[in-house]
Length: 310
Image 1 (cartoon, rainbow, N blue to C red):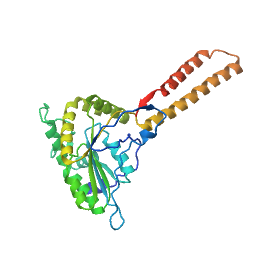
Image 2: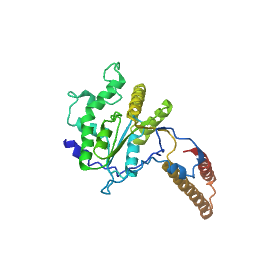
Image 3: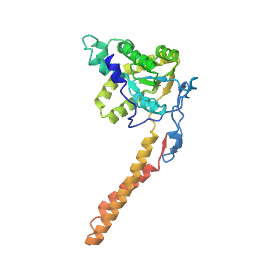
Image 4: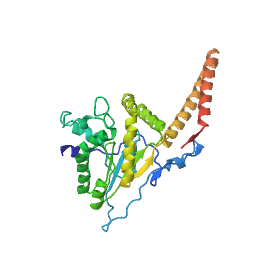
């Protein structure tokens, strides 16, 4: 239990990027709309908000447990941290962290599934059942994850748990609810295979760990079979299913717009500097440079006028 204290010291207060979070009801597929990049209001409002449960008789609000499952590339970590902050939950813990801590205590010779990736084959020739092998990697973490849930119950605190090693079920939800809290399970899914691949590649680019994501692409068929099992279990257990997509993040749109404005300003200042140089020195050899800058400026302005989907 030593590592449980370590895990509960992890805070969800540091988040560097958020994905747009669609409102959901059951298995929700967000509608696509064409809109101008500078109009962000609707996009920013696309956030998942669980209605806060009514306060208890003593006036206090019951603690919340939110379980988030999904295959690699579905955005569990970003979604979990964003949701934790939105719900005022200070603890967002990934099963990847639980696994990493356990690996430091338990050698591979004692527990091979603990040291195996969720999508990796259990046999050298890859003839194993992907779903059964994934379930093995989930089971080795069950007691530790349950310990986190029990600790949250004892402390009376809210908790977000996310990870590929969370197998959708009612077990921890019912346990937390029986103790006086409120709980729900969320499964992030990507129905379209090409979209799923794009999300994996995007994740590798953003984290700078392209090699890890390329390995997942090589095992993509296994990942998809695992997702099918997750969907089956989630529907059976009454979890919320959310369809992830590759639309621009409204925050990215704002960042792009700021970049565009700054680039235009810099380009205009450079042209002015060249013109001042020509006047002060009497040399008129900067025409090519000015034309190149004007061409770049034109491209930036053209890009900003395009409509995008959010």
